Length: 285
Image (cartoon, rainbow, N blue to C red):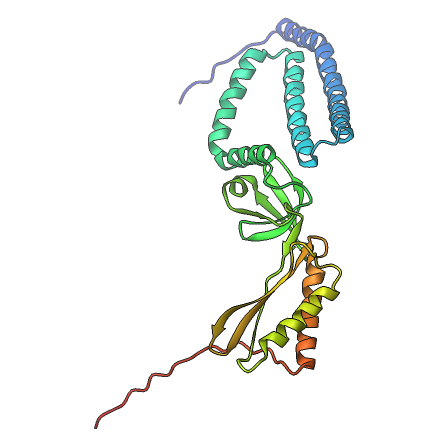
């Protein structure tokens, strides 16, 4: 058995320690109050400055994605500076604290390499601008309209109103198809007609459909071409151009009108036929 050390406190010792503790608390209260005041006022000023910077960027018509990205970075920088100031006001040495914070930052950075990659990807997206807010893009196996570019992720809204969050690291390192960059799109509607069909008449019908639709651009000129000869008929393609805003409605209406006009003229669209082969094994007796 290890004997416990006996500590004898006299009433005078208890009184002296109590007075020292109360004195320390009294001396520390002003620093504690000032630190809390600095924290609350600082948080208010940080929000105020952040809103002011956003308004200035909006008035000067900066790119919305760049404005939000830079405002978010500025917000976190000001929060870190405020935190260091509050620690200093509490009497904690900032030099040793900064060293500890740096070591913690290194450890966190090593454990969050993916997040740092996403941050770097966000910087690359903002710098090189492969897309901006409002563009319809396809990347990483998903497609949608860009609604927000954050520090670590990019937010897409699909055509059926689903929200997809794509990491910026993977987004900046992969292929990106931007359907909004050029402002116009060309449809490529393919179908097959019978070998007995009058191709000249088919082209006349299709050209008349394209000429009647005001959403189809005159330049570049729309085309109707033969693209191949397959087992079940002649493959053709209709290639009209439209603006991004009119593209999907135009695409749907051209398909509908094409089917109706060809049916009315007795020209049937051939179904897709999948060729199958059967192996017969003869048995000799």
